[in-house]
Length: 91
Image (cartoon, rainbow, N blue to C red):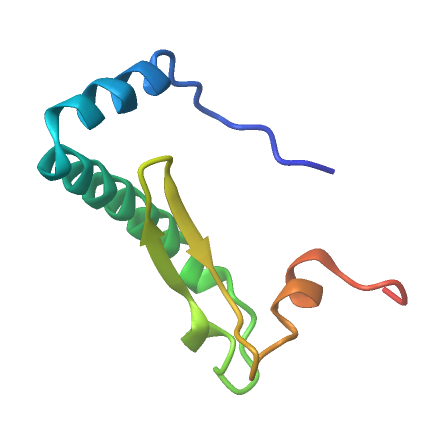
């Protein structure tokens, strides 16, 4: 089931367009703000990560883009992040 957003921001597309007109510094600022928002989410999510060895918790990372903040978990060496979060057929 998809997660519904708890907050709707009106006019964000226009804000991004106007910031692009201002130049690279404004874009960098937008990326930084979005990364800070993702850091807040990651800080709240960190205590909820199930821990056996701690490897999964160690893969939590954030990124800021012009479109939003992204929180990711898992890497090639820790491929079980998706099944831990979403479940798998036998469970």
